[in-house]
Amino acid sequence: MAAAGGWRAAGGRRRGRTGGEATEGGAVLRRLREARDDLLSSGFWAASAGAVRAPLAAGAEPPARCVCYGLGRFSGCPAARHQLAFLLLLLEELGVPPGRCSLFDPAFSAQEAAALGELGLRLLPDNEEGKHGVEGSATLFYMVHCGKALYNNLLWRNWSAEALSKMVIIGNSFKGIEERLLSRILERDYSYIAKVLKGTEEVALPTHPRYLDTFNDTSVHWFPLQKLKELSPEVWDFVEEPMYQDCDDLEIIRKEDRADGRSPAATKS
Image 1 (tube, rainbow, N blue to C red):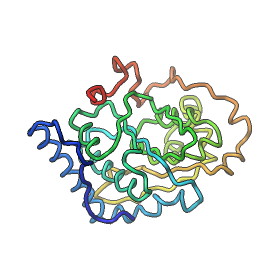
Image 2 (image 1 turned 30 degrees about the vertical axis):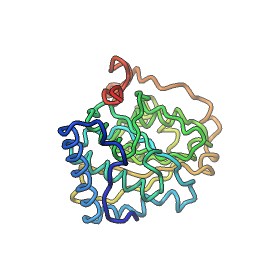
Image 3 (image 1 turned 135 degrees about the vertical axis):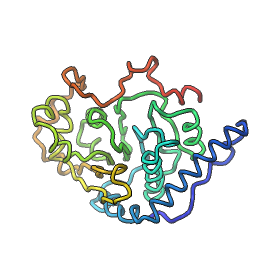
């Protein structure tokens, strides 16, 4: 697993910032290093080793890049900060360079966007509503506590056995979604989650008393090609884009919910 240490800002990124901005950004990075130390010293990161590496152990292709949705305001929220620290440890463990990891959350402030840039991470400029294609590259999607529609949209965008087999999703347990929703609601509103369940392998992250609200109900999901090929051929026939007209509790920020569909932080870059 990733060794203890700390993250340093990518070289040359501090030029042109005022003293106040540099101080604020430094405080954010310091708190992030403290969150990393917490994950390591608590044993949670070490206990997560089996789940994190389960797809690779099962023969999945190592990820070449990462996409992160819905991280939240990590400068002020300890849970979001620990989720970001976990993501950075994950990138180290899997050998994904920070520059190959893209994030989107319309809630990011300009300060948070700058901190992510200092870490070498990239911002997605537009709200994709989760509709991000793997485009032939093995991709890790980090989506802790995101809305069900975001997972459903992601599956729709990659709705083929070949594309799904190149994905690993760390996020809300699909088994938990199935257990909590009435089957008719799951099949009507989140049909791609419903259809992929039999082609999914899932390993839960461990529970830890310090992180009950941070990583609860979080699992690692992957989609072995052989399991996907065993699904009924009819599963692949219906590929209509999800619209959610009848969904009463849509847990997603739509493009039209913002005037330009862009992150306020990304518009400053």
